[in-house]
Length: 389
Image (cartoon, rainbow, N blue to C red; front, side, top):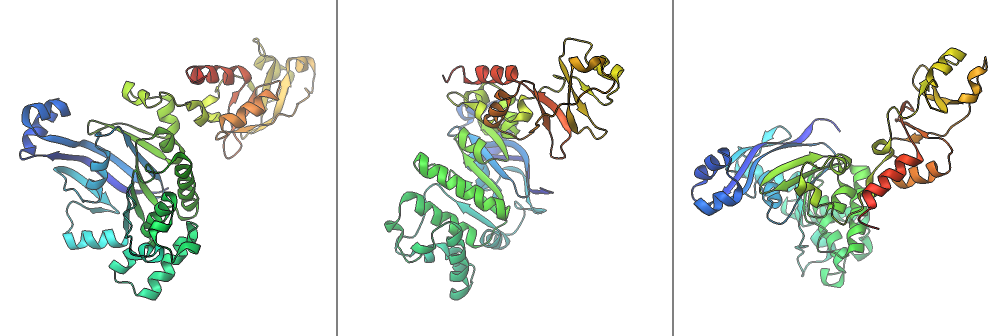
């Protein structure tokens, strides 16, 4: 991921006939409800600032009325901003002419809604190619492109069917194919899977993640479902009352929720499932030693530790030495399996339970980062699952 695809700066939207009054009250510290009670103005979004990196799935989350749908409509200017900027690929969307905005929406920005919004009288292929048709692409070329995209989402055999002949999950795939057919670099998905039953929803999440592996589009995804956000999001922004209250990776938000509002999203969700070895590890849990001479080993094990990890000059794991080796001129280095930083809790549990020692956690270059042991895993499981077991 490189430079930001989307940059949002101080974005505000007030619905009503006197937005300046509302903005002045907000600047003085008033909340959304107080502004409405005193002025009748509705605050949709207030001072939203963030960027979306090229190729990431950026999830906007919040309860109903938190402003997330208004925010994405400000980003593609279906709603005009009261204040602030939206910059996409270096262009300020709030400042471009209407004709340029229309062209941008047709060629480089697609939207997928919760309601599938398919045209019932058109075939699956005709629905999928509709955006290309509007853009003036010839019939042969647009159908060829649409068929290729239907293949990607597993619907090529249904190209000549009508939407009414498909299940809800398949209809949403057609909606996704229609958005993908124009080959947008930015996709905006507003509660796109929330009308589906849980199994179909997970299936569509898998389709999206699979497509993302190969195509690396930038996706702005609105959801009110924490598990969905954690599953598909590179980063998550949580909104309340028109404001963004926290932005972070799923792990950052699980580990350090900003306030009780964010914490409330976790009620009833077993967040331990989303933890990785990097979240579980202790940086100084096990002593380390670089040299195998007796004095170095003795110095590392001068406390209560029974063993120390042996690292080479690049901080890569060579194995471990035990307290028994302290008197030896050439201590015996025993082998130990390492765990990657991104290993899931499930993977860590199975490995740790089979080991009599803590396991070293290593980064992508195999350098030592910390260690994880049975006691640490048990502590995390108890803390995170206490209310779910």
